[in-house]
Length: 143
Image (tube, rainbow, N blue to C red; front, side, top):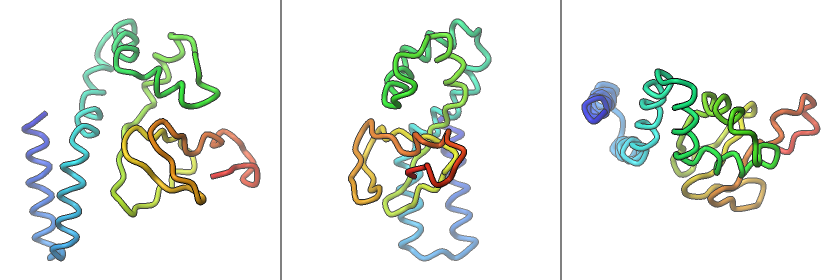
């Protein structure tokens, strides 16, 4: 993965140079990519995990803390391990830079590191954004 990530860094540098981006944006983009190393590695590793048997996928999910993430969302607390194994295939690690907006209305996000601001509240680790995304009516949604 280290080689893949180095190529990603090289591509970013070429992109920024070819588009003539200002230094401030270049610095922020490089910092984001550096900070997102673990997120990119997890995305990359998901392909490998999917190549394993369902049983091994489940064990990896449990030992990797997927149940802790699910326990942050009230309707996923203490779900059956078989359901958890199926559910983690839909988990997509993501990261946002300071000042960015989280616009995914059709997704549930769990803050695992850092903090964010939502409707006048500061959300910290294990806070949930979009847990009402299952609702069909827009006016019933909080986010």
